Length: 75
Image 1 (cartoon, rainbow, N blue to C red):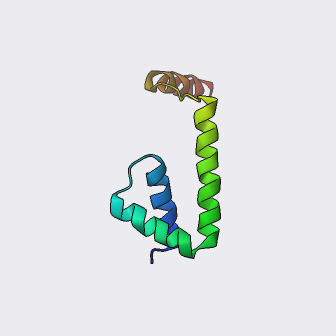
Image 2 (image 1 turned 30 degrees about the horizontal axis):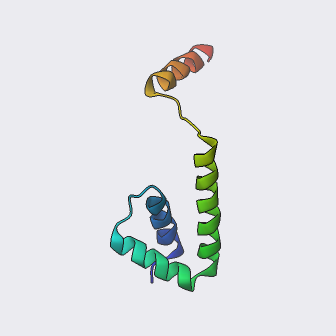
């Protein structure tokens, strides 16, 4: 069985559709055995769902650089 730390990593990868089939199987088995990770995974899934529904957007790389320059000028 994988560790709780490894399960958390795979859980995050699975939510972004980056986990392999084998990783997903290992995660499911771990979640079946570990109720703490199972609860945490459900909460993480709910949070991701809420963020998707909120239609959140991140800054573009250009906007990030511009903000960084402004902050550095103020120092």
